[in-house]
Image (cartoon, rainbow, N blue to C red; front, side):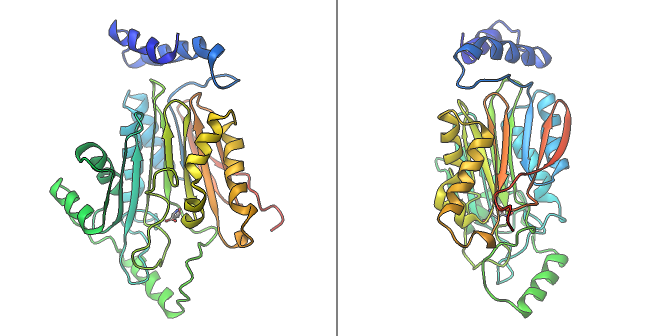
Length: 333
Ligand code: SD4
């Protein structure tokens, strides 16, 4: 019996209560092994994987999943931790501004049904991921931009906040002294959060939220809020999300590519490596920018890979959150 019909039947009989549902999902995984797309052993759910060293956000998502929350709730609330953290200068409040001093946010979210919501170039609202979710759930559209996104957020009850903190303002003023207007991402200096989660029912959701490249041109939008580039989820197969130089991720539609490679039988690790190879193979400039991918498949296997060293990921599994340094392509420096 396929997991989906098994779970449906189980919940109809009222068996799928919090702890029991984990057992059911596990049994269902055992049963579907024979006709699974993948070889190997299914892991215990829930699992969360996030870009960069973000233990607070990843733990928050993991703990919610343990309590029986859905993957979409966990992803939203996990991402919100980084959006509110002024020490993270790549996301939300305290994010680095564009070259005119405006902090503009990009975010998107996808649920287990393949629904998608996004905001781009949104200002003055801390929780871009929540507004993306509201676009997905409460409007007939999938993406709102700029003022329209901001007004929708205010109409939805969110308050306006000046996102430029004193620290980010000082850094921007220092940058202006020698501004060379090159939108080149610094290899170590970014922590956009992309998060993928599998809940106790085995359902996958993902989110991605960022203030984008520091000192970008006004109006610039990166990969993070764009379906298939910064994030893609197919609940039958798995999910992927990206961090780093958005222009390169956009050109290769990286997250969609990774999910499609997994559909063809590649492991999450193999798929991430192939997506990085697609970027570097025709790009002699790859030494000057970083891209990192993370992926998860339906069995809970994870993968991550980057162009350069120092990319890391946070993984929550078996009730523990750990940071893992990624393998990378550019071994020769
Ligand atoms: C962008 N991918 O806007 C984002 C930037 C990023 O960590 O990941 N920063 O291109």
